[in-house]
Image (cartoon, rainbow, N blue to C red; front, top):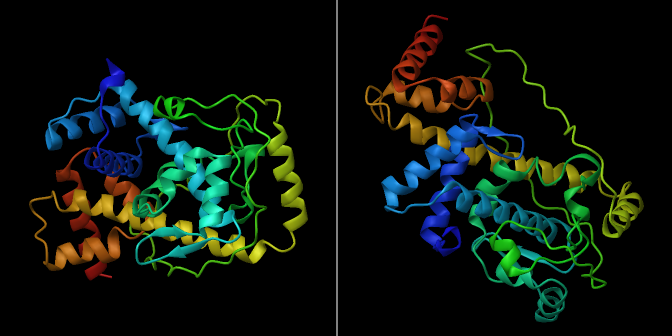
Length: 309
């Protein structure tokens, strides 16, 4: 039965890393992975950890992760009275705040004292453009810890199945506050070595639905703070882009290290890592290549072109 699968920390961590790798390869469509992506994740889970996890189990876990990421964004970027411990990658808050927040939404308890490294390095890459799109989009510094999808709370059973709660709740957490987070360094990239057509990103064309009371309240809050939040929004966006870049580079180097002809420490390896793979367009070309032979030829082509320039 699909419900009998046990998600240990080891399995969960590998699952997140594998999903990120598939996203970098271009195997995400709309809000989930495509058939090839899920197949690759399933095979790697079995190869590395000897576990059998079917598609339904993986998809349910993906949905739970997506809901968790929404809560994480609200906590880290939108709640007053909270701090961030960069060393331990944990959210810090007074005891009284945790008591009130957990009472309003029991799922927040899972974030208390939890190492959130995976959230910072991978979750935005997986869900950043999914949980905040269309009319439900919020600047990340004005989230309150309310379920924007339903206005209610998730039960643990529903979260495990990737299902959203449907109940209404009159409880709420402290009003959102504007918090400016320190800028993370931007990753410098070189000009394209493989010019490619511009990839245009669009908004979801899904059908409209009736908006909940919680969403209406959040819109009102957005209006109040709109003139105050531009600086914080820009800072947060830079952080999220940097985290996305870091996760993408980790996945790319996993593939680079699997190319036998490119020896770690060699000039060719260093060139590929520092000059070639850091560029988004070149990286997409590299990751979408059908096999390592094509990738190796692509690196050689770029390397020779660079030296002969």
